[in-house]
Structure formats: C-alpha cells, structure tokens
Length: 150
Image 1 (cartoon, one colour):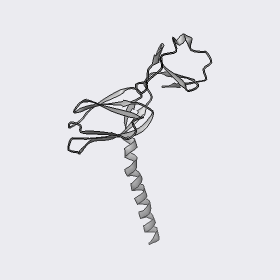
Image 2 (cartoon, one colour):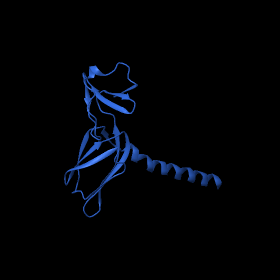
Image 3 (cartoon, rainbow, N blue to C red):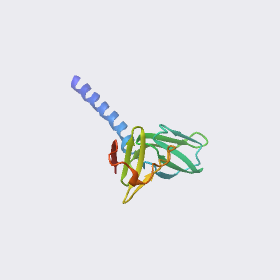
Image 4 (cartoon, rainbow, N blue to C red):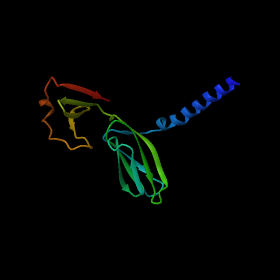
C-alpha cells in the first residue's frame, strides 16, 4: 500500500513540474534594444508588464503592439481587452542583439559599440546617455573591462 502512495506522490510531483515547464519553454524571444511587432485579436485595453526594466510595450494601433527588449532576462506581458478579458499573456525573454557588441567600462560609465564590421557607438533605447566620448580611435587601448556579446 505504501508503494502505491509513493508512486502517486511521484506522479503528482512530475505532473506539477510538467505544468510549470511550458511557461519558460514557450517564451517569446525579443532582442535587446529591438522591437518585435505583435498583432492582437482584439483592441487592447490594459497592458501589464512584469518587469519594465526587461521589456516595454508600446501601442502602435489599438490592435498592434511593439515589444522592446530593454534589459537581459525574462518577464511576462499580459494584455486585456476593454472588457478585462485576457487577449495576450506570454513570457518574454530578452536575448543579446544579433551583431557583435563591445562594451567599454570606465568606472561606472559604459560605452556600447556595435562592431560589424566597423565599430559605431550604440545609444541604448532605454536610457538617457551622455554624449559619446569621441571617435572609436579615441578609446583607450587598456579599458577597465571589455565584454563582447553575440
């Protein structure tokens, strides 16, 4: 009898894991500092964003939204119609941009460059940015820290 109850407990735990797993597996991927346009089946009434530091949503038309990747990570977006019915509910995963990016850190100051094939300063869509430090040739040869993303 105890063996049957043990199997039932394992089966219940496995079922709970299987129900939780699809949320992360079905996440919509959005690239950092890029928009993904989404057509809704009804006009939007309310837009809820789990973490606005990771993704932002802009209403293009009442039935079309643009989801912007603001920071790396995962969050969720829920959109309801004017009657409060959910018309969109999705996990959003923000991934690195497609091209090669170089970040140069000088203390707390960060300068981002897109280098494919030549380097050009990238202005983050999500923040106000100080003026560019100058041409790429003015960048010191020994930065504090350099990270490359692909």
